[in-house]
Length: 139
Image 1: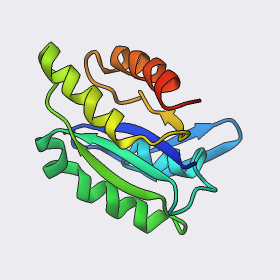
Image 2: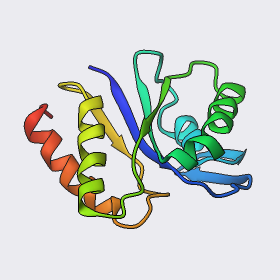
Image 3: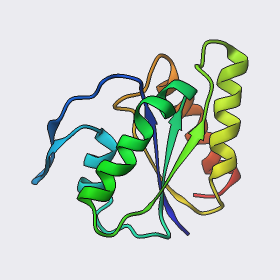
Image 4: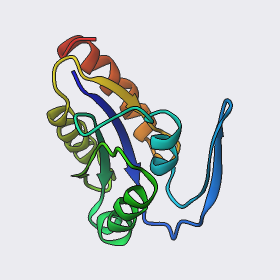
């Protein structure tokens, strides 16, 4: 069983900021995914993973910078994979996102969903996805 963080990356010109969760904090990072690794995925290793939903533009704009920031700040790094997703502008594109994320999750994976930077209706899609994966792949 692997632990998997599912998140989305936008196209913004992210600025560095500080994150705090309980007694923990991560300072001066551009991407919330880096902060989450430092706050809730501290003991994760290469058997665990981060799935980052990226539109074509988000991948070109920010994915390499996200990978670099994580490498610079984290010693034991989970695998980071971009999952190509469409813009989610139609029902059909929402189903594509659902199917692509479902295909990346294995039976008995422990999932952590980040909706801090979800765009449009993705948090609603996550709710359905979480229920579906709980029934189909266990958990």
